[in-house]
Image (tube, rainbow, N blue to C red; front, side, top):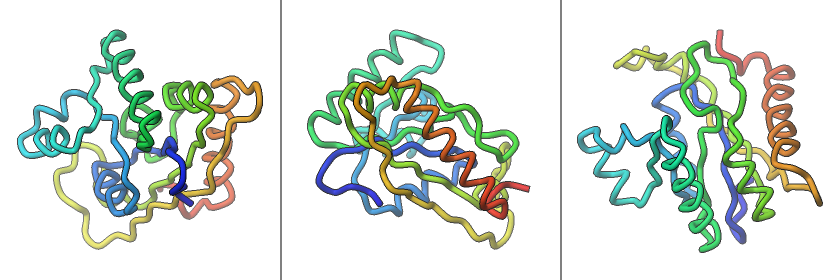
Length: 178
C-alpha cells in the first residue's frame, strides 16, 4: 500500500522503540522525523545524521517550523516522510491524538497519507523497558493511501486519519494493547 510513483506522508502510531525497526523493514525509502535528543544517542545519532533524517526540538516552535520546511523540501524532491503522528510513544498502548504537522503538509502539497499501524511492539518492549519481553508477534500494517479531498482542511484530513486508526482498532480489538 505504499505508493511508488509519488511521495507520501507515512503516518503511524508509536507504541515502542521497536516501531523504528519494523518501519525500516517496509523497504520503502523515506525520511524519519525524530526528536533532536535521538541525534545525541551514540550510534543511533550517527545513523540518523548519515541517512539525512529530520531532527527537531519538540519544545521549540522555530525548530518545528524548520523541520516542516525541511520535510516540505524533501517531499517536493520526491522523498516520502515518516511521522510518528502522536508526537511521542504511547504510555498505555492505545493510539493518542494525532498531531497536525503531517496533515498540514499533505493538504498543502496534495499528497497522500499512508496510515501505518504497529501492533505487538508495545507488549514486546513497553515504555521504560530496555529488554524485549520474550517472543512476541509484531506487525506493521500499511493501509491504502488517504488522499486529501478538494478544499479539505488539514484538520479535516487529520480527523479522517484519526477516525481510521480508531475504527480499525475497534473492528480488530486483538490488535489493541492489553
